[in-house]
Length: 256
Image 1 (spheres, one colour):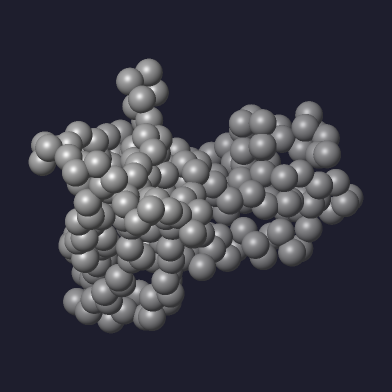
Image 2 (cartoon, one colour; image 1 turned 180 degrees about the vertical axis):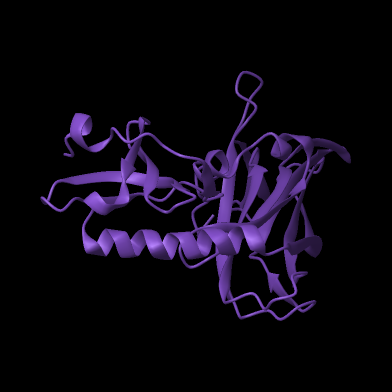
């Protein structure tokens, strides 16, 4: 581990470059071979100092020239993409797409079930005068999975409640990403997302229980992990959730 008193004592000047997303860890090595796993947060305006955050959440300032040549090159690349993130202006439009809807009779004549497929189209448009280099689109779709329907051995449909009054939230997600080609000024690229299934249950034709779609968060990320743009579309619950919090929601298994 780095010797903190010796290495992290620089007085940090004005900070002008900052990664918009600081979730990725990097193993930094100084010229003596000492290593530390941390996230690069900021670089000073003179490119001599940086701020990092260790895994335990502690932040430190240090001079860049004490690092290995490979790490100094890593920081130079990071600075380029950080400038890219601040210089480009992108517009992200999200449109919800309704898929196939099926309705089934339950084992009891008063029970009915409905399966609705839903997805999104994410359109990225470059509003900057310069062409945007190749990037990637990442997205997370989140919903409250309250109900699981299944076909019984006797040919009728039945259900399982995945939430109750004491614990009404069972958030799940699907994730996806797509490579984006270089985008000239005022050009766009449309990315379709994967589909999710929203289940509903009716008793005597009255809605009894249903899954709740929270929405989607989409972002454009450079090759170095800097976020150029981010957009969310959904209900008010989604508005209060950060990307890191959403990314920690359990992924729905592919066979569900």
